[in-house]
Image 1 (cartoon, protein in one colour):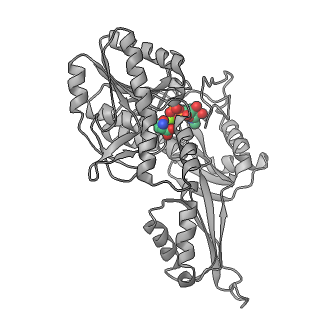
Image 2 (cartoon, rainbow, N blue to C red; image 1 turned 60 degrees about the horizontal axis):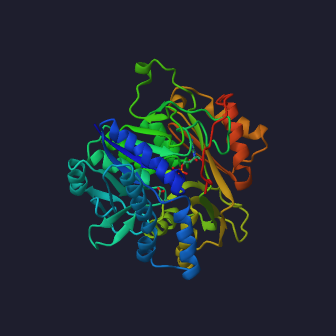
Image 3 (tube, rainbow, N blue to C red; image 1 turned 180 degrees about the vertical axis):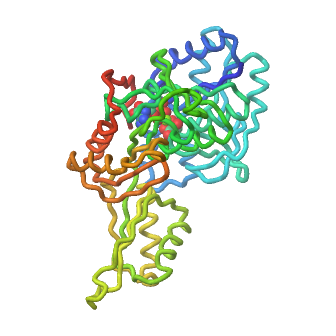
Length: 427
Ligand code: ADP
Ligand code: ASP
Ligand code: MG
C-alpha cells in the first residue's frame, strides 16, 4: 500500500523530534508500505525567516521571499532523510520542484496546477522512502521557486496523495485530531472521530488552522481520505472523508464545531453616495487589486431627508485579510474623488467566530441560540454572515476567546476529558 504522511513544524521542532519522526516513518515502511513523507519547516522557522527578511528589507520582492522561505522545508527534508538513513533505510529528500509540484507564478500564494511525480515514483520503485519539502513548487511559466501560502504543506501532502493514488493521507500534528474548537482556547473541546469534507471545508475557511483550506478543497475534489492525528501519541485521530450520517448510524450533530479567525480586518468606507453602481465600483477596485473580501455590510443611508452634508450617503463595511489591508486602502484612496466617499476607517482589532454544522439545515433556532450565548457572555456582535451550514459573527479581538467558549458550551460540545496540546507555540 502507498501512503503519504505529512509532519507539521511542531512535530519536527528540534533534532530529537526529527529522530522521533524518522522512527515513525520507518515503522510504516517496515509494515510493508511505500512511504512518501511531506515535511514542514522546523518549529517557527517560517515566521523567523519572515522576521529576518523584514529586518533586511521592509518590502522584499516576493520572488526573493519565496527563495528564502523554501529553505525552511528543504532543511527539515534533508535532516529527516539523514535520520532515516541512520535507521538503516534508504531515504531521498526532494524539493517541491524536484518532486514535480508545478504551480502558478503567484509568489507567496501559488496554486498547484499539475503534479509530475516521476522522480517520486522511481525512488519508490527503488525501495526508497521519499521525503518531499512541503509548501513549495516551481512556476510553470517562469521556472522560479514558489510557495503555496501559509500552512500549505497540508496541501502539498494531499495533492501528492491524489497524484500518487495513495490509499490515504496522514496529517501528523501537535493535537490528537480535529476538535470541536481549538484546544488552545477550549480545553473542553472534543475530538471529532469523523467529519465530512463539507463541514471540514467550512471549518478551515472559518479559520480552524488544523488543516489548510486548499488541502480540504483538494481532498474533496480528488476524494482523498485524510487522517489527522498527533505525531506525539497513537490515539485514533480524525478521518476527513465522505460521510452519510444515515449509513454510519451516528446522530447528525446540530453543530460540529466552533472556529475562530484573527487574521481579518474591517474596512468601512464612510459616506458613499447612495447611488446605483457605487458598491459595484468599490468592489471592482478591490477585485482588481486581487483581494478577496469576506463579509460585507451596507448600512442604511444617513439622514435621507435631512439635507445635511451626509444626506443621501451610506457606509459600506467589509472584512478582508489583514495582510491585504494597506493595499486595499491605497486602491480605494486612489479612487476617492471618483467614488465620492468621505473617509476610510480601518480596524484590525477584530475576530471572527463561526459555528458550523450540517445539522443546522434541518434545525431551526441555531442562530437564536448562538446569539443568546454571546449576549449572556457580554459579547457585542459587529457583523453577521451565514451559509447553509455556518453562522459567523465579527466581534472585538479581545472577546474572541470568550465568544468561542460561550458558543461551545451553548451547543453542549464541552467534554470532561481535557484536550491535549502536545507542542507548538500556536504562532
Ligand atoms: P502543524 O504545524 O502541524 O501544521 P498547525 O499549527 O498548522 O500545525 O495546526 C495545528 C493547530 O491547529 C493546533 O495546535 C490547534 O491550536 C489549531 N486548531 C485550530 N482549530 C482546531 C480544531 N478545531 N481542532 C484542532 N486543532 C485546531
Ligand atoms: N512552513 C510553512 C508555514 O509555516 C508551511 C507549513 O508549515 O505548512 O506556513
Ligand atoms: Mg499547519
